[in-house]
Length: 124
Image 1 (cartoon, one colour):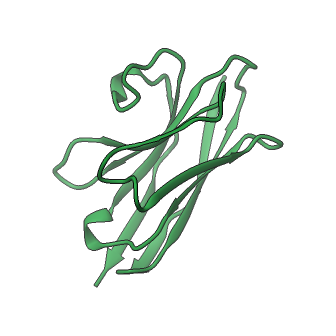
Image 2 (spheres, rainbow, N blue to C red; image 1 turned 90 degrees about the vertical axis):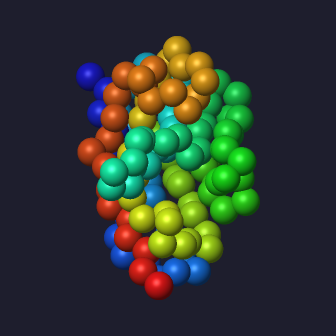
């Protein structure tokens, strides 16, 4: 059984930076997408960054390209999501998700497993 365990998050001042981690267990050797989504109150869940284990390629949206970075440590199956220059608009619950047949990567319905979510709160 695949499990995704998130850590990090918390409260940060506007302009600050943050790292969220996601450790995957129970995954097979088959390449998969490990992506980050976020959901703010009253809004839909949106994809913000993604990592494909088959090639090491990363994906971001136009709005997250400049401030969001995703990387991984394949020695322990841990994925990192670094966010810089945070603003109050980044306040949300952040989730990591694993999927094998996703298209496009921002489509939350295509993911098979989800982390428990971690709250990020940015104050001015």
